[in-house]
Length: 226
Ligand code: C5P
Image (cartoon, rainbow, N blue to C red):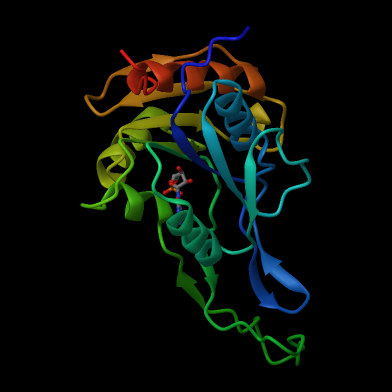
């Protein structure tokens, strides 16, 4: 039998992109496939945790043994995360859109009228990770964030861990050469609050997920009788 180091733990994972509607047929999105977040949810379930996965629109099947909540927008993801708490551990792997169209034309497609650029004003979305990590009550004991960067990966990730208030950042290089976004493999650096960095070799996202879950279990051991 497999070791179940997260037995008795509630784990919340966000995964995938968000879609931010412009009108009934268009949206803003990004290239996230959800593969890394879904693999983390599955690995946490295999480690014995009770896992809730809050997923944006992805083409992946629901991971076995995981409670999946499907959402579309960042604001829906925020609400679903709030509803899924409390949890001892939260992993924010979703590539949440930073902005959404300020006004969604709900019933009619926006027409081009030849009068100039598209009438697209953007509003900032809530930062889910930062909101949860800065909670004074009901904050998960371990909050893990991701940092997808195209340059100065470590520098940006170090700044992010402080700004977002999380305990650990998983930083990866998503510049086009690495084909990480949407791809099958990932090369990550783990950055701690003390600025420590651990760089892992490039591996399948499933393998990165298992290693990350093992590390999380070390940082936040199972609820046991002893
Ligand atoms: O600021 P940036 O988007 O690079 O931060 C990435 C981290 O923050 C990821 O863990 C992501 O899931 C989380 N995030 C979030 N809500 C947002 C933006 C990012 O939870 N609106």
